[in-house]
Image (spheres, rainbow, N blue to C red):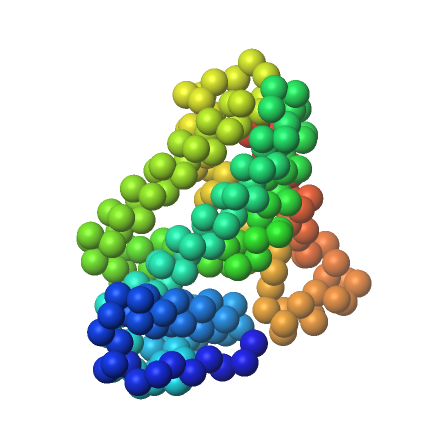
Length: 216
């Protein structure tokens, strides 16, 4: 993706201009987070990507972690659209295996989201204001409720109330499993050795296995 250039930030006085700059920052951050990992991306990197300086970023976001949170929320919404469409197609005729397939595929097809959720806990608890943490937790709670409703609508004989406690385990398991199944390029090379084949983990296989046990 080519580097986007912004007009001078000091001229962004109108709401539309401000929103355009926010969008450019978020888009640049997503590209960098995917390429380098959150821990390796600085505000200076993001500023360079959008054609400005680090101090200007603070006009729109409090920190790198604030940007991460907004990018994560946006990707979560895209993931939700995907998984809801899959579950909606199964209404009242799904099996645990079919639901496990839909959920697993939704994470595999949402690479950006699946990568970002792996660093939620250290970011939330250490680097964000309490207000931003509460904002995230509230949005996550509502997303869990919607997912529980969709699961109950898909699986015959189930209810939202019994599905809701399971939803947190779906997210936390995916977040923990994803990095184990997607090692660094250096580790990936080592894992190609036939003698280390047993150390490889396949996200699709492991996630489905977990979901089947959870849903049954």
